Length: 79
Image (tube, rainbow, N blue to C red; front, side, top):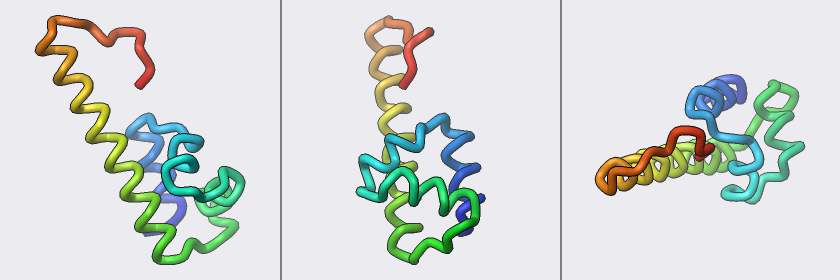
């Protein structure tokens, strides 16, 4: 997967780059350079970034489900 594809996946999911940096240990500036195509990510970096995005998406879905079950609205809450 290319850096641009990783960026698109992250953007569509509404995941901030800072959250990916925290979860992967990849510095925010390096992540930005990867996403802009200035650096070619290692296979390990691609795997770590994809896993972090997927984990955050699953967590967001889980929180939304829990809120729905509790009759709560997450409107206006940035997850």
